[in-house]
Length: 109
Image 1 (cartoon, rainbow, N blue to C red):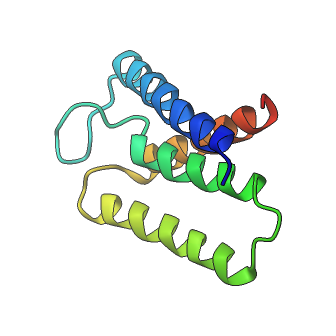
Image 2 (cartoon, helix red, strand yellow):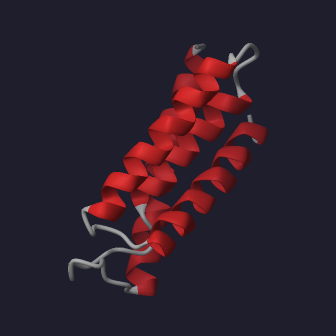
């Protein structure tokens, strides 16, 4: 991976953190376990952002690599859901934000 991609990916993560933090303060939706800051899920946004960015910037992604990414996404988000740290809606909204942001960052390069 080129330095340009590493820098873009890293700055994207920082901006994504700010976006989700602001949205959490505006939406004020608690987590299922009663803690604050549930909507949108930053983990959902982060995993889908990184996956989208990597997918769009890889030329030779094998089917095995793609399946590994999908298993990683499903596994990490499932843990948050089953541990009652996020609702399914919070994870989906976070994931959609991550995908859209990943596409945006990719096409602004």
